[in-house]
Image (cartoon, rainbow, N blue to C red):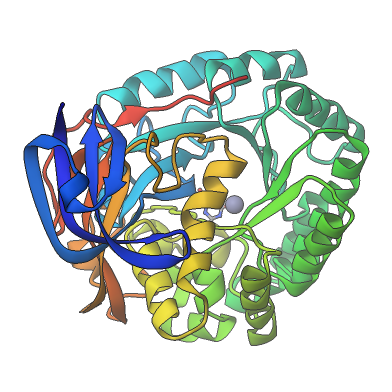
Length: 449
Ligand code: DOR
Ligand code: ZN
Ligand code: ZN
């Protein structure tokens, strides 16, 4: 048999150790992993000169924008950023224009994306107004429902426990997870209004309004509802406080179906970093104290936190520099910095390499039912990221493929760099360059059993 390609002289972490190996790729899948002498013949051979291959990173928290927010990011620029960052699969958040919250908006988004994307892209939906529609949206291929608790974005009244319960029941029936942005709407609204009345419109006012309690209260409320619904899967996005992490860990110990995510910025920055980075680093939830950050690392290492997601949230520079703090668009781009930041943390002994593979690849695949991705196994899709583990370089926003050319990590020295990205067996990024045409990526849909 002659396969499509063979990747030679690779290293990979297989069965608990780093070994020399080769990969045979056929029709987008890993056909064989083994020694060079055991490889079939191939149309094409790629020599990696002993660089490390990891499963393509799965980033389950990305805002790709496009459609009416294309001025911030497009499917093409966003997925180019993914490929450049060693990310082979992204799940797109629904706070778009139009909002992804119906079969029709989801279908349109999938159609537009199909012509433009460079990596695998799946989609979340916000909740529709009519909970009867949840099943159809799931059947259309949404990977989960995203619920933004901080404000009313979709069709579900975030202040109404009974409405949440009924909608969550429907997601459990449809066997899709609910990913939440957990900041309590009422608490937040009250605090923001109070600040505005007192003419407090600065960073301190923002941090005070987006307090630790605003997050932990929301997480506790959602966990209580989750505990009442059999088979419901609650996934807490960008967890940022010790109290919320402890609540999630406790729910896990009680065998509840809950998982959570942390972002690189919540792991690697503290609120003191706002002094230097200013409003460009403003996110929701905001950066926290050292004590919280230490708790996040501990939770990442002990398994209380399941995944690292970038929360890639591109905006224009003007939007990041608005007149008052309340008008600043929150979020930072992260697709091109997540993997280097986390590999650098491995060098600093903050997390083990095997744990990194779990939180960036295996766990997101498991949580979001990406059954043929996230692992280096024969038969899986050939989503492979080649990293130069020792390469040192500086993050440089000017070189970002994302339209959002800012980062709180700009100019920071990294050790560990993605140098090639293969998506479904195809080389998409080579030495920082995108080498395929828009549309070469795949719109993916959640498979239902
Ligand atoms: O920082 C954030 N940016 N938090 C959010 O919840 C929304 C996101 C965005 O879409 O920009
Ligand atoms: Zn969020
Ligand atoms: Zn987000």
